[in-house]
Image (cartoon, rainbow, N blue to C red):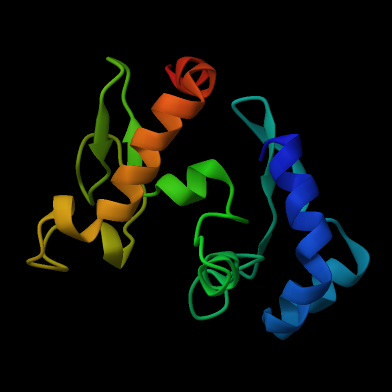
Amino acid sequence: MKPGEARRLARKLPEILPLLRPEAQRFLASKHFLTRRRCSGHRTVAVVNHYCVFYNEGCVLHKVGAAEGDKFRYKPVLCSLFPILLCTEGDWYVRQWGLDWEGWDLFCLHPEASNVPARESLKDEIAFANRLVREQPEWVRQRRP
């Protein structure tokens, strides 16, 4: 998570805390939501009992942002893009269960989980990726492996 994203989330945390799972609330009472672990140079969000600290029957950050009119407002960029990822050649692709190196066997990545084409079910995430390319091309360049 980039520093600006973390600051925005930290300011909103008092409102988000009551919406979290009890074990996540207890965790955040004594620890920060970011870990020391890094991905692409930025600290990652904590995991509690195998789930993101902000998971509670879906992404709480997504729900809070959506209630304010922008479901991506509080989510880290990589979470907002999921399951879209930038590949080595610089193209975007949709992560899928069993494709290439995909290690997660998440229901949402299973190709038989839905008969709705990705271009439809991920239209908001695709629009977000396009906005990112336009507004933050340096982020895109930094993300290329």
